Length: 326
Image 1 (cartoon, rainbow, N blue to C red):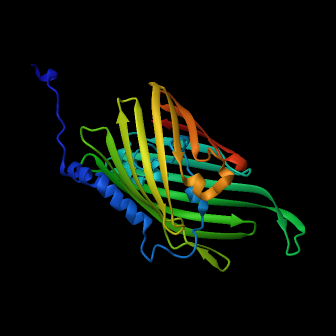
Image 2: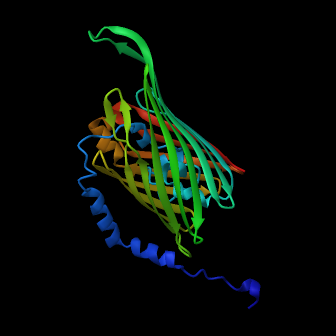
Image 3: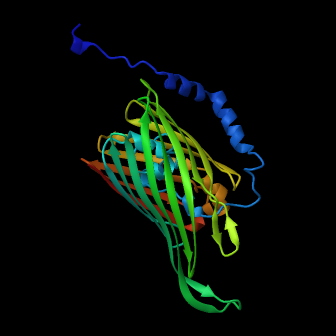
């Protein structure tokens, strides 16, 4: 047998063994139980504000039920798990436009730039609500007003020990309703581990850590979110993902499941489900609320993704994402 015919075997490192231990079903059950039974500090008796931070960004992760914590292999990692940025090997620019519910729009623009000592990322998300009719104290119509929520994100991630990457974000949040405004800062942290010799990845992230946002005399905490995720690829063409997310102050735990199948090297179809819709929109989301589907097309260094998500009586959400790597 020649040297060219010899196969290289990747030996698991200590991080692989640690991740294997943490990935056992018993550990996931204990972690899930911890999320469901938070400490006294976690169960504050008020719900979170800045709800726009809970809306999924890219069309691809949305089609997969938002289960992207362990996948996070593109610029959308800025939103789901900043640790995933460390795995990017090319510069990437991505943009998403969403026709969201109740005549609102939600947009995302992100850029990731890998360097020798890590990957930097920049992102902007914005929820826009225009043309609302104002009412005075006597319920009489007044002039219309606009409202918007915006998050500016700076992220950094670095790959450690070959297959583990860790990262964090700094976010500046700004909210406006007519002539009133509020702002806050928040932080994210995340890690992602890809197993050596196995098509398996595990991810964890803590999102929206901060003091809260104040409007007039009322302060609402940010939607602090803890997320655990796993991604597994079957046969190189089919992969499944799952996430467990816990909204600390809202005291809600949601599950997400996603699938992606590459029909051809350049074309993929996706489908997923998230329990977030049924928990937050109730019966208004309809019987199929939480389900979503879409497709993706790659042409060289360019890509386009589309996702359709029904919300019953609330309407439908459609997302279109465009991206390029260079």
